[in-house]
Length: 441
Ligand SMILES: Cc1ncc(COP(=O)(O)O)c(C=O)c1O
Image 1 (cartoon, protein in one colour):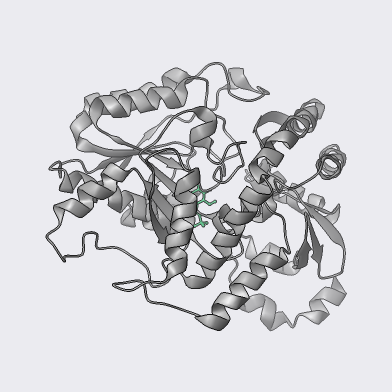
Image 2 (cartoon, helix red, strand yellow):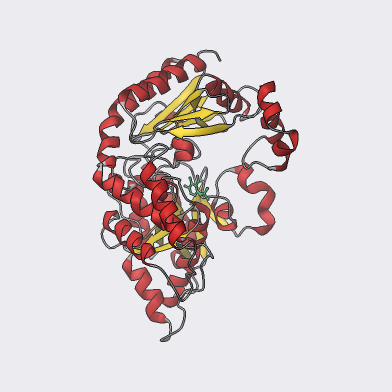
């Protein structure tokens, strides 16, 4: 560690204010990654670390894919940037078409941004614009859920159901009605979808009675709540939300920033659970994490309603980012989508899932583990808190890293989500290491 600190002058460590990081603690003993290839990272000291969380759930193809780097390089060498307001470039249209092909039928209009948080902001604005264009401008309320994570921009912060992500920022958020989360004591250690809890969706019906169903613009949910620790929807829950939304004309938004692109076995959780939303937010795996990108896909009727309501030659939707559909991100996205198709990556993940789930649930007999949840190639492992909430999670992060394993912890929950291209042996390595470390608590 002294060697590492000597390598980095103290100034270079101090200047970067690291996001979602205990900066003082981290800078005293930084965990710095230097290289990635396949399902492995190497740290600055040259030690190999297996990637148990696909970076931040964004690298289903693993690391170091030459084709992606080459495509980005070629794009930047040909045209580094192109404005996207009243102009464009070919790659964004190709990428949108490719994504539309794998989305649920009819969800084939795609708006690009640069992150999941921007996708969520965009989705909120699309919902408002859609209702206004459709003559229902009174629909201005939003519904979300406790324990939700929808990114960190102001819309996502408002929708957030995690106290630390919202408490300080109340002054700049808009009011949101939060449904109860779907974690139930009785469903601890349930594999796949919990059998009970569908009635928790009726919270939305109660909000309709309280506010008026025609006052609500949209209901946002992650089909599987990811960052809070893989809360799999109870059997019938998403179906019930869909029914209530249909009954009241509310848009159902699935935030698939984590579940998107194969994590649940199908391209999207919407298909795995057989429930079609009206809007889907995407990011992360859209480029395998190789370039910043987010996107919102909407049902055709939403696009048509907004676009058709505007006068000829008028801009229909006053929203967009300088780097919306950045050429380099589109180039990465196109190659990534090609690889998903060519290598049948989602089917690969689906085939690996039973072994992954087997090893995940084997953690249940460790004393410090208080719950395990999982679906597809996603798992949440709750570790009994010790001291302030999150302290043990941080300690586990460090011990895992020392043992050569990267797992993202939120509070005291480890979220395991290996690359979809991992092999059985990689899954075994992840859980052998996790097991060994968790037994030390
Ligand atoms: C469900 C969900 N929505 C939105 C986001 C925000 O994405 P980003 O960090 O790219 O802004 C995340 C990030 O983890 C997420 O899990």
